[in-house]
Image (cartoon, rainbow, N blue to C red):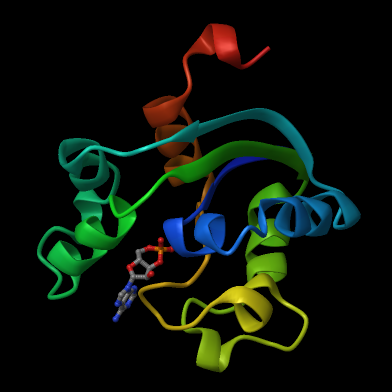
Length: 138
Ligand code: CMP
């Protein structure tokens, strides 16, 4: 079914200048970019976005990393977009990511892992609303 998912190109990949190469992979995978913005996240924005992880040991490093430079945030739309995007991204830990995935090709570590993607329809809806207002999502 037609879905939307939230995608973030993280500070490591923005610094590497590979936004275009990552967008190409979304497009080739049948995902359409229906909204996008570049943004420097504040500490409170990053903490709020990742609130589900607030009790995990990696939380403070995650927030520090996500605020270390600008990120590119987009809403991707397509058939089965949530799973499709996760397939294109590869495993969270790039050491476990399949060859040809974004994380295998552009990520260095589980922290600096190039991209984020929503993991389920409920989280996609919450994450999209966190960064985009309804008028930005026609
Ligand atoms: P992301 O999909 O953005 O969601 C939370 C992020 O925390 C994850 O990608 C990783 O970059 C980071 N992270 C760091 N350590 C871990 C871990 N042990 N398990 C899951 N995520 C981790």
